[in-house]
Length: 300
Image (cartoon, rainbow, N blue to C red; front, side):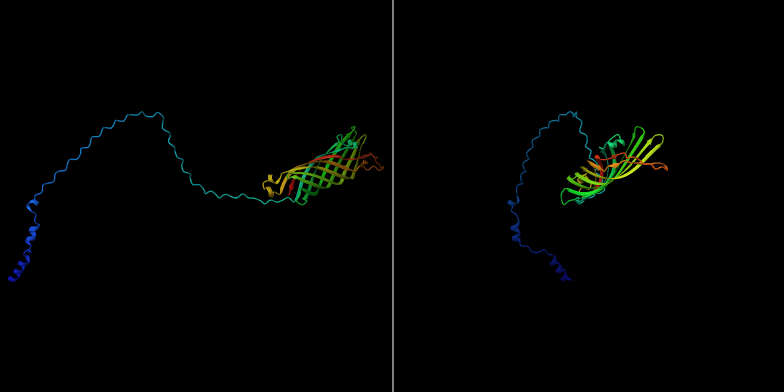
């Protein structure tokens, strides 16, 4: 027990220090007194700023303010714009052949004075129809072809209020045609042709009894005409170069020759047992100058 107490006393005792070193580190009496630092000089006093002038009141402007600009509402989203479509085009087809269907009217001026027995006027109005076709010769402007037509005219006259004379002429005609294209839409043409001329004559009289006579005759006919055709060119048509149909009109003039007719109508005797013969009334030549105007539809 005394040993344990002795060990505790040695453990709790302070450690030994070097007295000379402690004295060297302690300050001297002169170093220990140091005057207190002087107070810093007061800061420089800032000058007082001058007062700002009072604002002068300004009268309100007399012009009214501009109206407020209202922005348009944003466009509503519509359906999407379809892509641009390509305009349809057709191939250019050269004209190699042409087919015409048409109708026409005209007048025949008869030079024979015997015509006055059937009409006081020398001109006889006629009407008819035509179908024709032609084809291009090589690569030029000339078209060669032909066709057929039909025309009819008639007339009636009264002589001295006692005799009646009636004539009707029907003619089928075949012809050859030559056309020159001056420019597309304008042609110059000529045709020559001929055929039979079917003529029906009738004479009647009012005396104490009614007498009538009837005659049919077939004669030869030749016709020559020249004229111009005007029609719509391809560039004026919807399909332009690929167009296959057009239309136009034509005007022509010429001369028509017919053989003479021996006028000798057979009388109608109404079953009379006595033979009756008519007399020869002379010759009739239905020929002369002719002009014609027609319209047509062309396929090419």
